[in-house]
Amino acid sequence: MSHPILLTPEERALVADGQFFAAKARIMRKVRGLLDELHVGLTADLAGLELVAPERFDPATFQFVKGEHLADCPYQYLDCPKHFSGDDKFAFRSLFWWGHPFVFAWILEGSRLRRYKENLINRYHQVADRQLELGLSPTPWEWRQGEGYTLPLTRDRKPEVAAVLSQRRFFKLARFVPLDHPAVQDGSLAAQGRETFRACLPVVTP
Image (tube, rainbow, N blue to C red):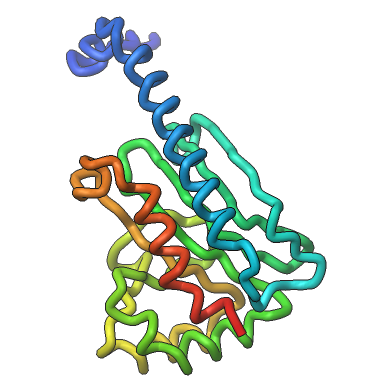
């Protein structure tokens, strides 16, 4: 005999809220507007910038992506610049993930990886203590933060960061901006994205 499938009181309250999806649609439009603003700013930042980029990299290439199921939550992101070719990954991703902090991250892998690692260690004083974190997960597509997932780049952690980097086939530098951050409340989140992009430049420039 099968058991009845019952909605919990919390689930019934959500289903009864006829305004939820209208509010969600408004939020997602605002997020896209934020990513549009950031795209304009990053395009200006990239103009004339010399980067340690893979072969056939085009700084004008970008993409917007929207979906519903990143660990069951809606998301949107902008890749600008965007380069995914074979084993080479060279992209700056700005991710909105429902229920989680905003994330701004460089994803780096492939033919120039050794140079990026050397730049990070040799120029560590330029990137340390700038609210950046090194991803620790075995995949660049993990977006959670905290112990076991990320390592903050503080000045006292240079030896630890060097040890972690030596074993990695890729690396990701990220800044996480929680929803209660002043930049979210005052509408300056795009500026946070651009500042993160610039904070990582010592790693990806000659």
